[in-house]
Image 1 (cartoon, helix red, strand yellow):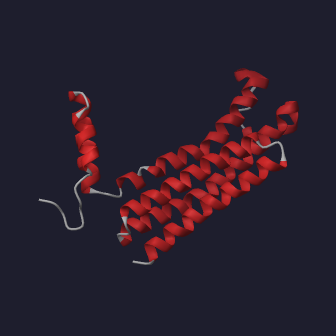
Image 2 (image 1 turned 45 degrees about the vertical axis):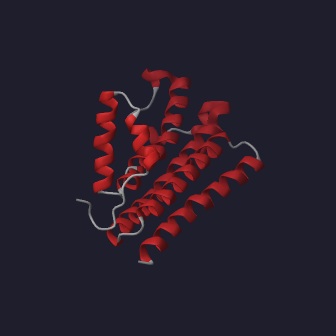
Length: 179
């Protein structure tokens, strides 16, 4: 018996599941049943992805610092006191990685709150998932542009990506609050 507002999966999806090998078909069926019970699951699954993405620049910075100093000479007691200028030509990358990481940490709470509010307000799950994917795609582009950005064109694309991710958050709030 289906819940009110639930629709069956599309025929093409059921056909694709039917073509999977036995064990994969069972795992896919379990996942599909979970999504059918909570259609916000795909959108909520974007939260850990966004959180991991927020820490990617931090790991880039760490890798660059370890490349220069090695594991034994890396200052793990007070790593935030490290001066990026001590890393020669990689100083710019380290500074960009720090700024990118901080910006992602600033953006994440608003995104998470918007997704949760959409679920609470019972906004359209597919719209929520679409906007969540738009946010993630924009943040991936933002991160790549920030880390690789050595010229004005890439910096402009980064700004465009920032606006795209911020717009996706605004739309999520609008979607939740228009219910």
